Image 1 (spheres, rainbow, N blue to C red):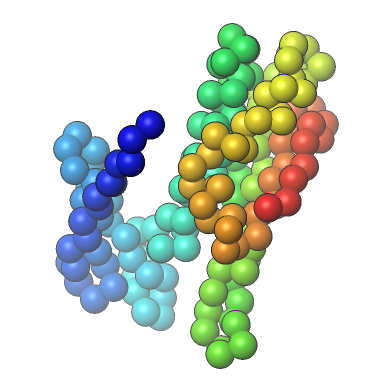
Image 2: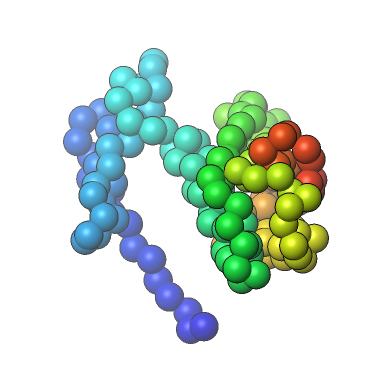
Length: 152
């Protein structure tokens, strides 16, 4: 694959509100900080980071299943992002916990171990973010059976 540049433009609307323009055909999105800085009228940058990690991992898991012509739908993701202060007293993202849940029993899926062994390596965002922020990922089946757990 050749290198590619992804461009997103942000335009201040009001105080901490920014219109995030992804380019056609994707609709723009309003980002905003929660109170007391902003009004919380859109997702915060930390929420957007959490969404990017969760969305990319979900896509990567589905892609890995589809390579084996498997259908684990529906896939759900829950992303918890821990923030706190660093040694300089600045708020930082300290860790991200992701739970992916597939819509079928793991025992019914052929090639499950192959899928679980490789899906995270397909995730561009998580593999990049994980270089600086610890990410804990768990994959559960429809009965909440733990299928995989990893730390990066």
